[in-house]
Structure formats: C-alpha cells, structure tokens
Length: 169
Image (cartoon, rainbow, N blue to C red; front, side, top):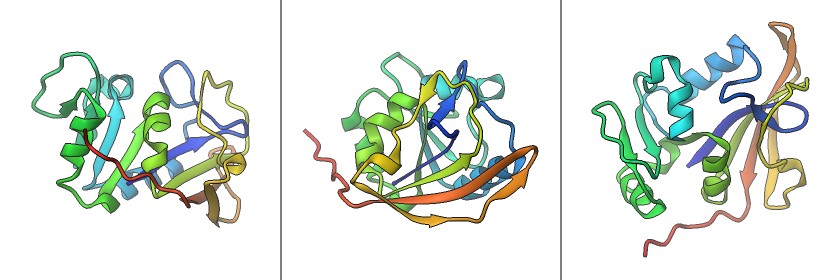
C-alpha cells in the first residue's frame, strides 16, 4: 500500500480539518492516482469531503472506533479488521489518504509515499512525519519545480526500505 498527501515546507498537511492549499494540479494528480483504487481514511477525513460523501469511483474504507453503517463506505474498527478487508485487494491499489493519526499508524506498512511538496508554509495544525529525516525512507523521485496557482510544487516519491508486514492476531 501507499500513502498520498501534500505537505508544506514544515511537513504540515492540514488546517482545521481541511487542506491548507487549493492547488488544482495536485488535486488532479490525487484524483488520477487514486481513481478506481482503494482509499483508506479516518472518520474526520471522510467528514472533510463535500457533504461528508466518500470519493467517487473508489472503494472508501474508513478506520473509526465509532459505530458507523453506510452503504457508500466500508467501516472498520481495528487494524485487524482493516488488514482483513485489505487482504482482498492488490496492495498496489491501496492508498492511505489521511488524517494524521491514520498516516502515523499505517506509514510503516506503506511501500511508498507520494508527497506533493508545496514550497510555502500553510499554518498547519496537523503534520506528517518528515521523511527526509527518517532513515527508513529514501527519496527516489522528485519532479522539477512547477509553478501553479501561485505556489511552487514538486511531486516526490519516497520508498520505504523497512516495510512492516501486518500480522493478524
């Protein structure tokens, strides 16, 4: 599985349960990368979408301790349940999309992290681990800087050199 996100210069990823920047090129990359794939998120990330609706043309899996039943999402309450559901899919088709606690919990299991780096400070209240300072992750791809919608961004890919394999209890 992979994680996908955008981060500012301080590895900030969100503010007030929302994105810090409106960057259509980044949103297009996210949409095209995750289309017809499996996306895993926490309940707050689901609530942050327009009208709290899941992403279209994707299998939406929500890891949440609260009782939830909806026809448009798969809800799981534990890592055991999550990995049981994910075992039915090709791991290359699974994307972790937030929020911060879900990223933190699942990062060790991700083979790659796709980060759109925004050369700005967004006043974040939520952060992602600085992968440049994590010895388990290597930067394997970095695009040339792209100026778009008033921001300079780079698309990057980090490879996890010590992927954990989940063992069910």
